[in-house]
Each structure stands twice: as C-alpha cells, then as structure tokens.
Image (tube, rainbow, N blue to C red; front, side, top):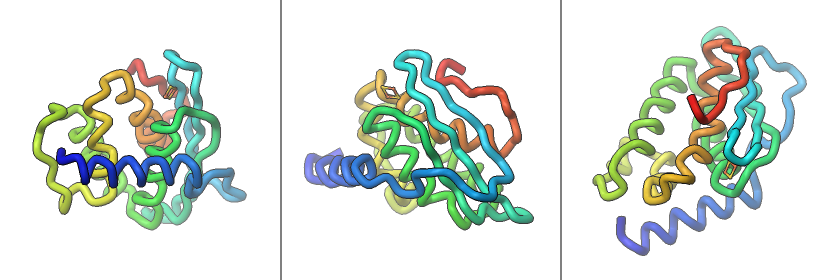
Length: 152
Ligand code: FES
C-alpha cells in the first residue's frame, strides 16, 4: 500500500478511535453478543435492533485499544441499515482482507470503508484487535450467546 494511502487510512482510524460512531447502548435491542480478547482483557458488547431482516440500529460499548475501537466503529457504520445477509457478506469480506498477505493488492471499490483496515495486516498482533467487534457482530446475528473470544 502506498504511503499516502496508508496515512489517509491511519487518519480515518484515529478519527474513529477518538470519536467512535454508534458507541453506547440501545434502548430496544433484539440481538446482542459479547466479545473478549483474552490476550489483553479488552471487551466489547455489540447490540442490534433487527426488524424483519434489516439491521435498523447497531451500537457497541466496552473498552479496547485504538484499533479495536476504530474497527468496531467502522463496522457499525457499514452494517447499520443493511440486511442480515449483507452484514454476513461484509463480515466475510472483512475476514478475507484481514487474513490476506500484507502486500496483497486491495480492491478499494469492493472493500468500501473496510479498506481502511488493510494496514492492520502488517501487524499480526493487532489482527485480533481488529477482529474483535466483527466476530461479536457475527455472533449476535447467529444468536450465539457464548462470549466470543479472539482465540476462536
Ligand atoms: Fe486489546 Fe487491542 S490490545 S483489543
């Protein structure tokens, strides 16, 4: 990834960490899950209001490092308003990106906002941080109420 793009992506991540979107709790929640990173003890809850097949609202709360918080915030801005199937598709796209080689080409059009997380691939120890809220969102959708840990 070129330096200019990397810098731009870093700014977006810093912004989402400083001003996380959809941070808090929902008054009316139909689906929720808890995610935990045992390596550091960081924890996020993801709550959703799903009406029919549409994720009308999504919020997250808890505490985590800058990458985990920014990734959670970005995830909520992507998922809100999408259908459950679309959310699961984005989860797959995110997963494929984060597990790809650090120097693999990225298709910004296909990735959309997820592309800003591409830089995390260069820091294997931070991949679990970026994963945390995404896996938690997936668990909330499939109604798995076991705490998801980044070891799984
Ligand atoms: Fe805990 Fe990143 S250091 S989630």
